[in-house]
Image 1 (cartoon, rainbow, N blue to C red):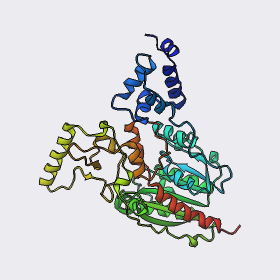
Image 2 (image 1 turned 30 degrees about the vertical axis):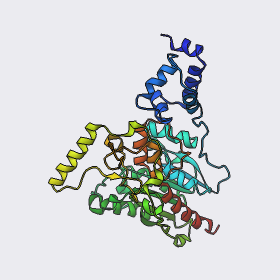
Image 3 (image 1 turned 60 degrees about the horizontal axis):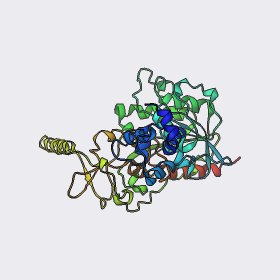
Length: 389
């Protein structure tokens, strides 16, 4: 069967194919993005082949999927940032929401995260940062990024810049060393403080100080900033002591601690494909029972609309959703939808999700709580605003 000729004979097929091509999405990605049921990619394939036709509502849902970048950097922003280990741009988004920054460089290695980043910010991050010469990084005021947690060799025991070589943190350190931006914000898991008996964080902090930065360690929970998720993370804030002599003016954001409720992020009329199967539900219950007998606290956790907050969503959420299951009286519980996962991290609803559900769960699980970033960004910018020229 000739797909092209069928497309030419069907206006709906042509419209859908051209829309999907412009979006650079697979049939599976488009099906998930517009909320089609399980195996929706097969339906789109039939539509594009002219074997069947969508309803007016289905066609409108696809054709109305956004193509305009919602978070492009303002050209007249006051401060330039670079976004390292960018993921899907959660940290950049927190700074963007201040209305004061524009991104001049970003780096990310995952091809699906890059697709999501491009759809939302209009930029295509460069790939492997280890292959980017620091001389080629644009001048910037603020460096932001998360980085994988790796143990450092204690062989040198200089506890500074040299001891970070061979780790991904070194990529951040070498750029700070060469470009010397005014400030930085780094995010990581709280366990970094205990990693390798505390040596890892000690080396990181020593290296940053050696490079001329005043370093401030912050620890925050997402639920204290208005999103219903018990996600605790560390945030390392730094100021270049020569360029920002008023670095002591930095004030730690005070969490608003407004009450949160899981129901505030839940969608209505959720597709049945998110309800877990009888087999998976039975497995969850069996493992929880066995773990309880063994004295372990691990197992699925149920939440409902009146729960104040959920557990921390992880990058492995796509596997079985066990850490956050939504109770559905009278039937098996369900997983969060990708949009709900986005809301759980504080991403606005106009944030575009152009990838499959599986990739979306990974991306939001790996990302940051945007409201926390915004609160810290505002305080960093406050200091820079008042820096003497």
